[in-house]
Image (tube, rainbow, N blue to C red; front, side):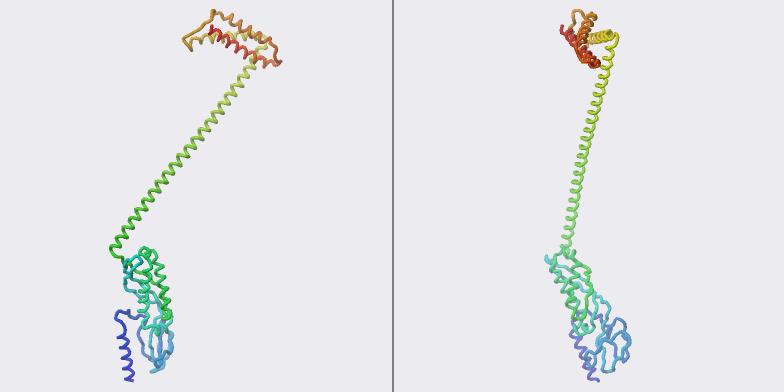
Length: 353
């Protein structure tokens, strides 16, 4: 018994001397309990039992009974999720920028047997694997992509760890980068780049605003010109319609006046009424001779209205005796028109004489 105890003590000391002093202490183990024949295993823990130095079985949570002396609890593994702080490390990016990165690793032991016999220190192995994978993945990215593709970088590290740690019975749930430290000069350059980018965006936005304003002003002028032209067109159409209506109304009024005059001339004493009208028009025209020009040409007897009227009525009588259509209204209209023409010719003759 003493010899075996001495050998076990020597083995423990030998294993303790082999470990490097920089390794992360094991957190998956809560201590090695002694074999008291009747054991109570806590929930979410797995106790690995060896019988005579060989693996025997894994104790489940609850009541378990072991054989004294032959059975020994060799490993205690925690099945809870374990959080490991990955120490800060330096890595070089694709564009030769040195970064200081630290992170947090979340893992869980899925197979206590592989975690006990597959690797000496599973937590230390996973930590080292996370650091080396981080350096490898950062070497594939430039500095700008490191900040933009943080999630994809974490996912790549988790996949690499799970592929390597499958034979260890450990599964990496997630990896998170806590902080990324950039050299001071690089940080200043990044700040200058950000400021330049913001100034660029401000300039672009200002130019776009000016462009949109010019386009809006041009569109407004275009719409105003279109509306003005449409308004002018409508005004001209209305004015033309009004003038046409006025001309039509004047024509209708003149036609009605001619019809009434023709009807009056056919009645008794129509010639006397026509003579009176001619005399009135002669007097009115004679009174306006000196208003348009300083030069006046007068006939030899300007005061003889009777001869003028007699001459005009002679012309009228000659016209009335000429053969024409049977329509009295049409003949009356022609008579009035001929009379007006004769009067105009007589006035012109008087002016020229």
